[in-house]
Length: 337
Image 1 (cartoon, rainbow, N blue to C red):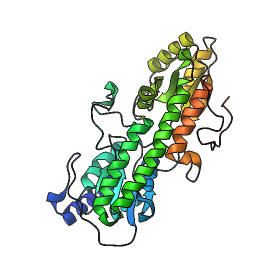
Image 2 (cartoon, rainbow, N blue to C red):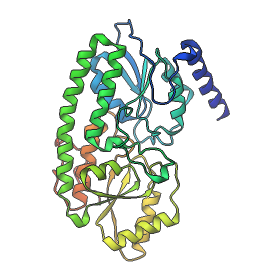
Image 3 (cartoon, helix red, strand yellow):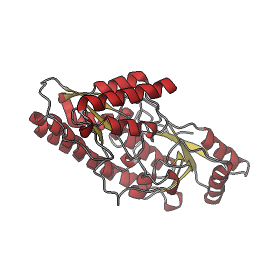
């Protein structure tokens, strides 16, 4: 661990020395990005799969986009290896989610940001009045903004702006790519709103492992309860489990949900607690929260991720949604038992 810290600081220091200390950005501001001269595709590194998918849609054929975090990886707990850091250093531009989602990587990413090696949070232009401020998250904003499709759509504008600064020749293509993608996201937003609204009001409650669905609940009109807080670095206690068991016993909800990137032990404890009080609660589905599905699958895209979540939530809680989802492409066509 100590050697890894040394590597991180050494690389960050070399970036600063190579670029000049005056070029280093502090906080959310950015130095002016220098336009590249190469005609080859831009080398882009991203952190989470959601950011990777977003950047690929905007960049199109004019960038090679590689993500650090694969299927099922929890970004709150992710630790960059020497190999990861080398990729970050070799990239022409880095995009990350921001708002402390990447946890321990945040400071390193900010320090690496220079005019010739820009490191950009795709959430940087979201208005603070929109952002949730969970009290247990130590004064930080809730980073799970991709759960609101409209908000995530706005993040494409940041990608357009930064790629256009780096590669102004293809700026018009970046803008058109983003516009086309935002049209698709608007359709997805309407679908999610429709299927969640179909859930009977008394059952319109989403119970999950950790508080990743706050924006989803606020935007699409469903109450959200969870065992853990916004970050999975926090530990759920016995009181957290018992509080949720009390709620389930009172409301008699038909299902609760596990998450692909979060350990299921806390949800299992809730289910067992409800059973001890003669209330049967089933797992309605495994949802994608901080990570998408496998790369190369429909669920491994942002649209597929949200389609999967909304469709399975609605069906498990008594709502109406197509069995195969918004685009008829969901691989999981049967409700979880």
